[in-house]
Image (tube, rainbow, N blue to C red):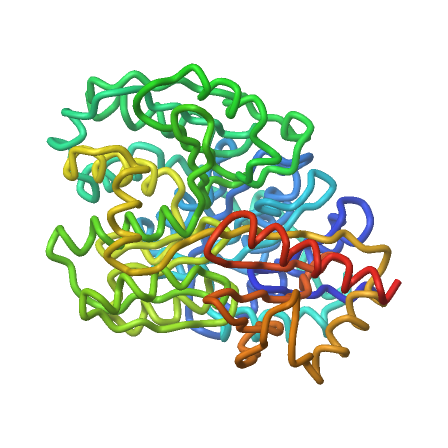
Length: 470
């Protein structure tokens, strides 16, 4: 019987390897038992545009229904934030989203959602993971369509109405420039433009890769510069506005500026912090271990408390459920704001960025430059994902860092943090973080320094450091 490993945001595996109909049914049975033991009677199920997403979602729905739960199954693919919203809208005990998010097309995944309309907490995942380890295929309750009907789920209009109360529609009516949405072949295709049209906003939205594509047009569906070649080329001919790129399931975003410059997740986080604060919102700023220090310094400059968590939006959700959180986010482009569900939402955040541009009467680039000055922190950042053959090299590198060096890349190591991986804080306001993936044979290396050339140099030394173990 396969061991199903739940990482920072659910279980992900390669389709037809461990991600099979049989194992998906086991995970669904574990989740059904979790809900029933908590006296919940309703669940929602959705899927993204990955291969066989509709069939995997149907398997989950049938298992949940066979256990006596009222089960609502999406009528077509939908973004993760819409499925999360559906859990709250229908007062469900929780939900399952079949998606591997930004992972390569060969992967599929099993994400859980809480009744509050957001990413499942660590406690929920721990309970379900513990249960599934003891469930065999023969333990899965059989489905009888006559006894256990499955209802259809179509939450688009309700989700759009919710967004209409989150964003400032009047401000958006004054947006000038081009808004481009690159869905990367994922589940947010058509949803960004659909909201603009339903809200009656006079904004012209240009769509790229909006049609669903199980192979995501040949790239990994993660909105990073190396995956956005066509979008970058398009934006070289745009003079005003900006482009939003959403990942495979639509909960994360990246931004490309006129001329083709990438506006990264840390810059987005800072702009959203500024917007929410200027709206009059108060509360804590919650950031994961991998987020730029420009965010915490900006928050501190405004008298806001900063909370740092391990990587994984579920930790941010824990803080949001405690209350008093203004904005929370992670390096990978997932950000949640007060007034919305406790969830990442690439569509909502793209709209909020447009609102910020209008209210500050400037471009995103100029707005961030102002925030950078306020924070007194020069920001340059990059990440290196090393795809390794198996986990041995990854494990060897991390073990070596248990006794960290006194210098790295020609800089003094001032102090070390181990909240999630190993972060070497270097002299001259630089740092580098080594963090192993929980779902793939990948070692992620994150770096921040004063200039792009400094970042490139430090990452090059990190690459050579890892190679020395091969």
